[in-house]
Image 1: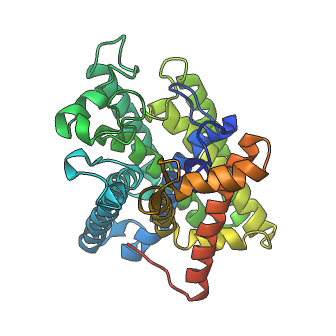
Image 2 (image 1 turned 45 degrees about the horizontal axis):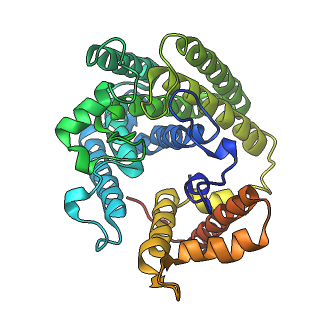
Length: 356
C-alpha cells in the first residue's frame, strides 16, 4: 500500500502500480483487499482468546474489544486525513478513508464471527456480498447502478457526509471508501476469517494449504463468472470483486503457508515480519512522512515559486539522476518503503508492538 501510494510523480507510474480507472482489476487493486483479508485471518486467531470451547464464545469481552478497536482505528484514520491539521479546514475534512474502511469492515465482520460458529463464516461472507449487490441494484436505476455518477454508494455518501467531506479524485465527489461499502469489505474480511479457521482446524499445515488453494481458485473463478453480470470494480468493492480478490488472497496465503511453514523457507521473510508486526502504525507513519514533505517542509524558491521537500527530491534527485522517469518514480516509492521498513525494524528490535 505504501509502494503504490507514494510514486515520485503520478505522471510516471508503471501500469501495474496504477488502479483501474473504473471497472477492471490491476495488481494495485489487489493490495487493499489482501490487507482486509489478512485482517480477517487474524480474527480467527485473536477471537479464539474469548473461546470457552470451539462453539461458545464469551461474547461480552469480545464485543467490548471489537468496539474499542473499531473506534480507535477509525479515529486514527480520521486524524491522518486531517494531518497536519493547519492545512485543511475541518469543514472540508474527508470523513472516510483506508483505515476507516478497515475499522468498520473489521467491526462488522468480527461481530459476525462472534455470533456465528466458524463453519458458517464462508456462508456469511457470500450472504453479505449478495446483500450488497442487492443494495446497489435496488438503490439506483438499473442502467446506472455500477456507474460513477449514478451508483447508490455515492448517493448515500452525499446524503450522510456531504460532498465537502468526500474524496474528489474521480473528478466528482465520490468516495471509494464510502459508508455502505463496509458491507462488501466485511465480506472480504469474513473470507479471510474462514481461511484462518481452515489453518487452525486442519490436522497439518499441508492439509490447510490444499484447502486454501481449493477455496482460492474456486472463489477466483466464481468472481470472474460474476463479472459477466456484476463488473469487478474496486471503487465500488462489488460482489464479484469480493470473490475475485478474496480468491487470489487465499491462493497467495496458501502458497506462502506452503513455502514458509511446510518447506521452512524462512530466510527471506525477516523484512516482512518487521513490517507485519506493526502494520497499521507503519501505514500511519508513511502517511505522516509524506504529509510532512508536502505540507510542512515548504519554501519559496528564488523564482518566487512555492515548492516542498517531496517535489524537490523528485526533481533534483530521482528524476535528475535516474532514467527512465517511470523507474525514477518507482525508486522514489521504494525509498519511502525502505524508510517505513527502517521504522518498523527499530520498533521490532526494541520489541515495541503497538496494538489498537
